[in-house]
Image (cartoon, rainbow, N blue to C red; front, side):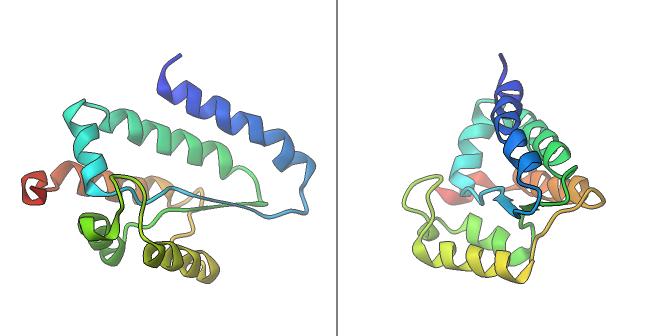
Length: 137
């Protein structure tokens, strides 16, 4: 199976719980990986695959009223993603960033809907595709 199908399979494992627990709010977020991570994915031509995964996962999860999905594409978060000092490696961010993510979720910042997820995903991947990765080194 390709990566998109594996991601969808993983989400589909959660769907019965989401459906059975309709009085429970579920919270998911698309992690703000560092631009070092996106550099590695660019080098192996996986950006379109990741964009497709993000789109399909959102399309699937946002069908449910008890599911909240977050993605941050504002300048502040894009700057955080671009500053490698915020990360312990290419995907794991500092406690400061973790706190910021928790605060953003609590305030509803970056909450996706069936009406805006496509635009937000496009904003993120436009940034990823146009980023000056050489500036990291």
